[in-house]
Length: 291
Ligand SMILES: C[S@@+](CC[C@H](N)C(=O)[O-])C[C@H]1O[C@@H](n2cnc3c(N)ncnc32)[C@H](O)[C@@H]1O
Image (cartoon, rainbow, N blue to C red):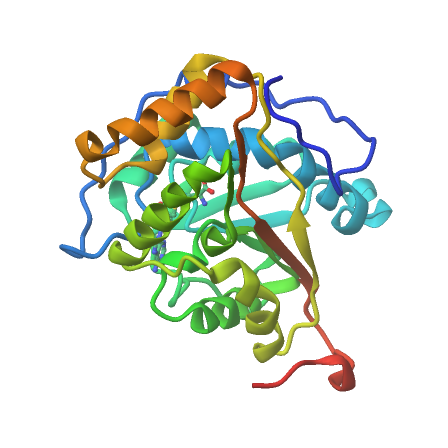
């Protein structure tokens, strides 16, 4: 294991669901239905690495806060994954949840079916389900890409009868890179995310968005941190991901700093990733934050 996934995630280590190791999956290049505006079409390898970084923390949160004894007695709770992409998170959680997904991108839905996870094409803003249809409605790495995250969280709340969960929203504006010369990368990455139409500071807004939707969440930050020494394959993949959309030739000097730091083990990349979990139902209005 190359990533230190301290946490929050306490001492419990859970068995992995059977699947391919991260990085071996095929990328799925999906065309955007909205020209010039990205909807979060990350290569599947990148999504797999994100899952690898966070899976222990996600499973710990679910096992500790959500999957209570009643559920364990009555079988797996039903769940909806909103903006499910190629189904990697559903695959991870399917030993615990009876889960299906929706995604606006038909190619992602096909990739999910190929993986054996069930999904259909739908917009997060208009979920084609009755009120209170699922025990748990969750998303990950979705809200930064949507036009109005509050509309999406309200819709998730409508179709949930119990839990509304955002497993992960990154806060790229809060990135830390070390050695110091690499902080230019953070600025470039934030600019490229913004150019693609996403909100690079979504993570920090998560709690407030839940509150505006009448939800009182348990919220926090996954304590994942990438430290050296890390295999070259891993640092190369991260470099490609961070510099996608940037003229790489102009970054030759920076790439040298990156590669030396990766080789001597001093490279640190920290990208805060927030979560929020809330039970639907009456909340203590006094504790809510307002606009
Ligand atoms: C970064 S990917 C995350 C995929 C998956 N949740 C994961 O964590 O691996 C974002 C996904 O959200 C989908 N998406 C973006 N906007 C959407 C919308 N308004 N309604 C439904 N899906 C949307 C994209 O098509 C993409 O598959």
